[in-house]
Amino acid sequence: MTRNPYSLLFGKAPSQLIDRVSQRRLVVEDFTDPSPSQQIYVVTGVRGIGKTVFLTEVEREIEQVDGWIVVELNPNRDMLTSLAAKLASQDALARVFQRAKINLSFFGFGLEVSGSAPITDIETALAKMLQSLARDNKRVLIAIDEVSRTQAMQEFASSFQIFVRQDLPVFLLATGLYENISDLQNANNLTFLYRAPKIELAPLNAGAIATNYERTFEITRDEARRMAALTMGYSFAFQVLGYLTWNADGSWRDVVDDYRQYLDEYSYEKIWSELSERDREVSRAIANSTDGRIQGIRASLDMASNQFSPYRDRLIRKGIVDGSTHGYLSFTLPLFNEFVLDQPR
Image 1 (cartoon, one colour):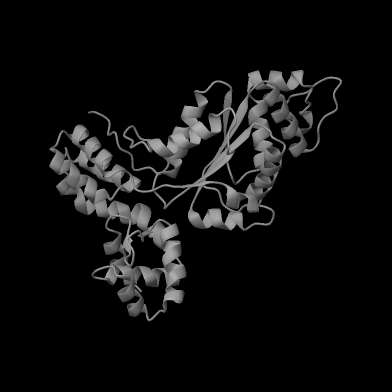
Image 2 (cartoon, one colour):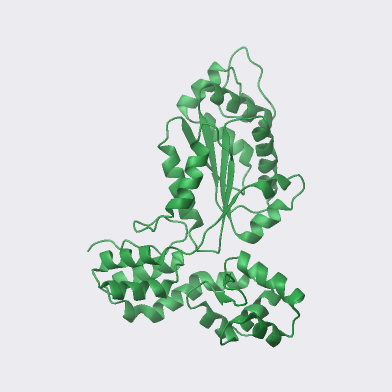
């Protein structure tokens, strides 16, 4: 039996992808430019929109560029020591550090240089390592998935800011939920992150989804459009509907109930749990609205415009609500309206 080309796992790159070409090219071309204008990009969006897959695709492309080293870091560990260890563990780079007489034996990396005193400060060690890589015409891309305001992340970001000021060849691509990125930006001495360009991942292109379904399931264009509309461009929904339809021998209408249940259990329940009680009240008002008019939604909540605006703006920034049509609000996620209405008060 042919393997299902779609995946239900968050973060795992499936064989069927809708490429975000323009945003991916923006990051890759900016970082690989001889005189890059940016050394950091932050990718954000609602849970399940495809942040991790986007990160992976950028990593893979940059790895193919001569002179680039890509390092993935766990934001819950000692990131500075981890970065130094991963760089020193690559034989070709270890030789560069040895030629530069960088003695890292203090940290237990096994990179000892006779006649050179061990470096005992990790930030100093990394600065020297990056300086030696710069002389060797190499650049380092650091990839961090799902950042949050941990002590390790704050320490790393502070050091990264110093490395950038020292004009060292280090670049950062990080993903995170809106609220986690915002919380990290508000940490002391990390205001430089406010200036970091952000890529907010929007829904996938409906035409591209339809084309994928049309080719994979060998169905009519009209049927493929109906499937694509059911996903609303939500990356996880695209995978779930494709996965279930594949297992149902291409009969997507037979899996709609299972499709909704998967979205609820594997995505929406987590998204809902991360909302404040007031955010949930506003969401319920949006779900109960017959036309999505903000005026009517506010009236149902008995909220003035200045009271309502912060909640509306936060839900929009979280990627849950679409406010692009003046005076109206709607959910960006497929069947989320029904999910909200089913939630107990």
